Length: 90
Image 1 (cartoon, rainbow, N blue to C red):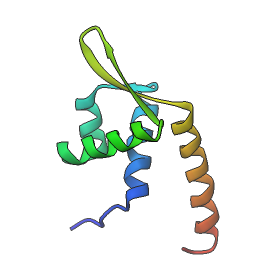
Image 2 (cartoon, rainbow, N blue to C red; image 1 turned 120 degrees about the vertical axis):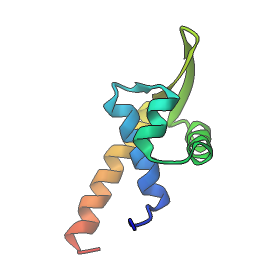
Image 3 (cartoon, one colour; image 1 turned 45 degrees about the vertical axis):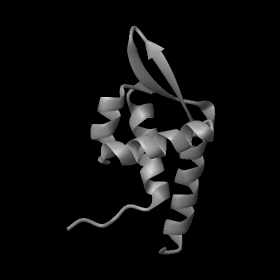
Image 4 (cartoon, rainbow, N blue to C red; image 1 turned 30 degrees about the vertical axis):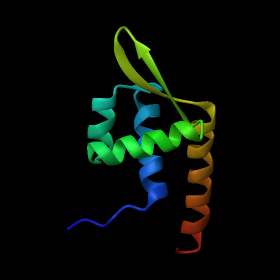
């Protein structure tokens, strides 16, 4: 059985999935890439939209999630903190 992911790791995975798809992603693709249940994914995306890290848009009758500059900054900051804590063996 795999190790449970912490909330920050899940948020990082969601934001990376969007960034890695060129900054926009369809909900179905995000569901597969984030490895979450549909309800969990919706809760996390709603929270990220509240925090202005992700936006939702309709494009050609298709809903898409877009990572914002704030979401990109989170990924940069997360990576720096991860490298710092890893250097101390956390």
